Image (tube, rainbow, N blue to C red; front, side, top):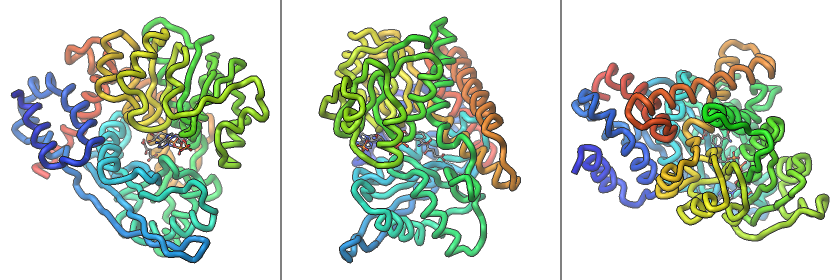
Length: 445
Ligand SMILES: NC(=O)C1=CN([C@@H]2O[C@H](COP(=O)(O)OP(=O)(O)OC[C@H]3O[C@@H](n4cnc5c(N)ncnc54)[C@H](OP(=O)(O)O)[C@@H]3O)[C@@H](O)[C@H]2O)C=CC1
Ligand SMILES: O=C(O)CCC(=O)C(=O)O
């Protein structure tokens, strides 16, 4: 058994029920084999075992009263995974599937992603098993207030800075910040990112993950002498990341023909009418099938995951984890897909990643490709510290240059450690080295 395999076995034994966390551990650590060989100092300092153990994980009760006057109890989480290079940073997810294994997978991935941005942010993530779907604004507000009553003890602009993720957007960040300010009595708006523009939010943060994804995918295609113009694109999801990936892809000359939500997908051969999607999803919070009312030539197909049966050149999973398994990956290849850009976190299973790489599909891994969101959050933190705001053009320019740098660093690391042009391995290695070196320098914590 190799050193890495023995580390993975130890981590499995310590966390037997956290399957998503174990999935990312295997994916990341397996690509670190040549790094460990070249740098025995990481083995001596037991960096991998230390990296896999969160610095702190907090789990708490979130009681709140629904519109019928019933007291409901949810479970809240914040995992402060690694603070070696900066304050913990990462989103909060509200979804009924949330449990510690999901929060830990997201927090672990965040360590490497945040390191890749080149900005001083450590890795963390949080959430609750609360389902915002179908809840009134009042219910969502009371839930957020109760969630923050506990969370506020553990966060701060120099400690831990949460933001949005699935089920947490501008509305929720507003309620969370309102409660934080009420309890703390200070206007300390650097404690959360993704805020509204009237109280310290950054221009372009809403668009940043989707735009950043497309800047990265464009760079990856350019590196391989391929243009995005005229390419047929499928996007899973129709939330924050999916919407702005669609906007930028269309602006870059690609044709997005399908988007989805958990009920199914719409296919529109005329190209997605994004104004309708934005209204349905950002304003009215409706199901995607409603799209057909205004676009009667489009079709709706029921069922999660079916979108990947459609033909495409570029696939952009922008919804949730494990969206593309081996069977879907085979379907994509069979249908002529040439590139896959991960907007969501861990949307592709490990078996599917191996298969796609083996078939020569260009794969932009989440840690690199969706890092534009957290990078712009870090830019929001800088603006809050300076008590100053950059223009949309300034933020967008910084975002683009960060995404291009991430591509350069991931491709260089991949080449240096013998993987050729493999951005999956390259992103893991480049993200790892900075954090590992910071941990080495800081002693045995
Ligand atoms: N927001 C950000 O800045 C960043 C987000 N990400 C990642 O991108 C992905 C999408 O996030 P975001 O767009 O913010 O989230 P949203 O809540 O805005 O949108 C999520 C979308 O995914 C769909 N979906 C389908 N199945 C599921 C499922 N099982 N669980 C959750 N969602 C599902 C949702 O449909 P339905 O409404 O029917 O549930 C919805 O269309 C996530 O993986 C997130 O971790 C990564 C980096 C930054
Ligand atoms: O902007 C942030 O801090 C959160 C981003 C995030 O959760 C992610 O990158 O997955």
